[in-house]
Amino acid sequence: MKLKKTTLRNKCDKLIGAKVRARGYCEICGSKNNLSWVHYITRAVIKLRFHPRNTACICASCHFRGHDDPYWFTEQWNRIKGPGVTLWLSRESTKLQPITIKFYQDVLDKLKNEKGL
Image (cartoon, rainbow, N blue to C red; front, side, top):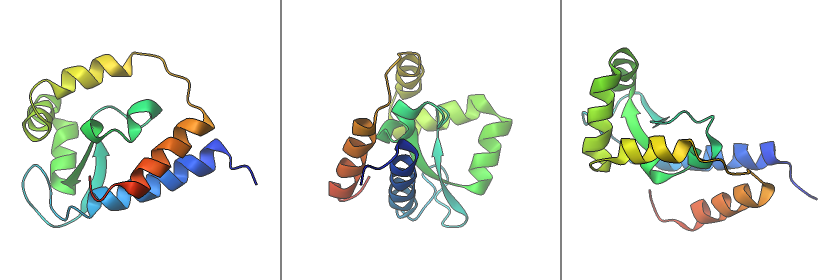
C-alpha cells in the first residue's frame, strides 16, 4: 500500500516531536516543565520542518516570550544552535525544493535510525 504524503508527514512529526521532547529540558532556560517541539522557521516550510538546526525543545514560558520578543528569541536560537544559524535558516527557507513522498520516506528512515537529536 502506497502511503500519502500527509500520512508520512504525520509519522515524521510524531517521531521527531517525541525525540525532541525526550531531551527532557528547555534548551533556553533549563526548565523541565511544559516542553514542546518548536521551530525557528515556521514548520510550514516543510524542507526545514525536520532539520536539527530548525528544531528545539523549549518550555511554554520561553516559547511565549519568543513570540513576544523575536529579537530575544533569535539571540537564544543562535546561542543554543550556534552563531549564524538563524541567518542560514532564513536563507535556506527561501530556496524552493519539491516535497515528494521520497523526501518524507528519507526523513522517516533517518529519524528511525538516529539515536537522539
